Length: 134
Image (tube, rainbow, N blue to C red; front, side):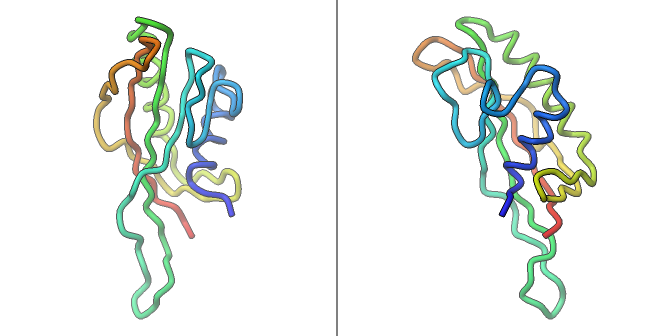
């Protein structure tokens, strides 16, 4: 069963000229290379929406974190790519990808820095809440 994580990854892959899953776009992990890459992680989202009188989940509401890493001491590149991705995913409305229908995505706030990794590469992240048709 596909997830919102996979759907968002496929959407970014299909709509970004520079990011490709498995090359510089990764799901649930950030490998040591390449320096400039993006990882998407699942976070705890909001409670699902259920229909009245039923135990069936109608709309799931997961949260995803998008993390951008750039080369050593290159914070502006990480920040610029994060801004580009935030704009891209904020425009997702009724998108079907990887067998999942994302009804809407909403960035939950601004960017924040996770500081640098052990190789002095900056990381910038932001979170996105999703409404997923189950």
